[in-house]
Length: 468
Image 1: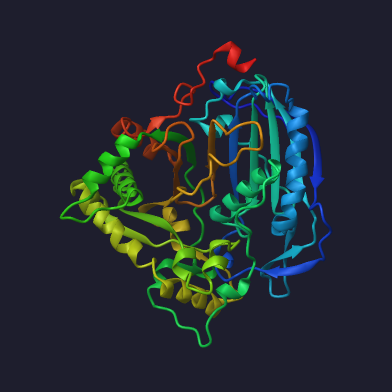
Image 2: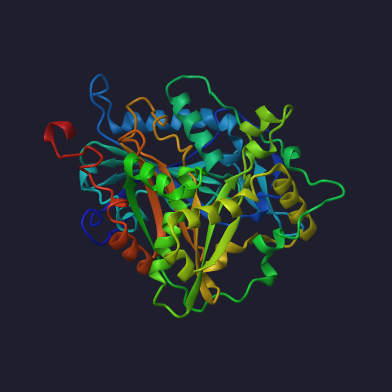
């Protein structure tokens, strides 16, 4: 694989020097693992995540890339014994539904070299600097990994996995376990593959409101002939800006969460980008809700904490563009809180499981995923990455200086994920995947909040002694 991007920090070559398949260190008996009803709501899309490391300093100064790659592969093989789902492959069953064949097919692992220094990477623009270069394209299996040596001696470790098999929570569990195994530590949170935790009820029961949130694929409108292109950007937001937004979003004694506050602020920005567009008079915003805590009770608490798979719902709201722009931020935050609250109960998730069961084997998905194509509206989704373990993915040569999910998800709606910053406690790193016009308004109207990620923010000032 070789690629050349556009723009500073993206115009460099990447060469894959070695490719192999890493299987679990212990033999596993082949078996089938059915996807849960909540897994079946995911389209066949891949999620990527990457971590940037500086050249190891003392006492690891003599640690070369070959040694680091060996550590990654050996610990990966050990981790796959426990996280065996990532070593399998997805196949279709007799009714056309995807299932996971746990056959220890293994993980494609690539070792690459990039002719660029870490401080030269334009991480603010991952379309140019990351996509197709540092983040691998998955061709087979469930998970693939690329470790890339940079000219400065730094390293980028990137993973791409099938979203139908794992959500971000599951991916985070795996990443932490992999790093623990590399440091010869015990795995702190073992995965649970107990699909019985998400079995439908007999008889099933689901609220009619779920028909507004999810739709069988056969009922979707025809795809847009020429869908608009979405672009990815990465920003950082200071802790002070987050606190200020939260204060503005809270009113009448009702304190809104930081995620609700940021989502409301973004919703206003996206609406502003449509204010002069007569074809988009309404705007939708979805929020990804994790159901593990909602489905946990006394006997299931430990199993749900380690549940590996998808336990997600995406409630969304829709408002007129004029109202979103004209109302105070607290009004928008109240609207966000109102529709998110509907998906934060145990009954909501049990009902969603039953809803999928009632429609099987026909595939279905969240309406908001295709919401950007509906005439007269725009749409985007906010997903919380606050559990992103950027400080824990240390394979023995230090914590990453930067880490982020990378998810140009293929939907016609935008996607935004805030994550903890590795640089400064309390700050957020925000991955944004939106239309060009929306990004332009975001940077014009909210440039003091959404600040482009720079080497200076990451502490990469180009001190030669630091890199060599």
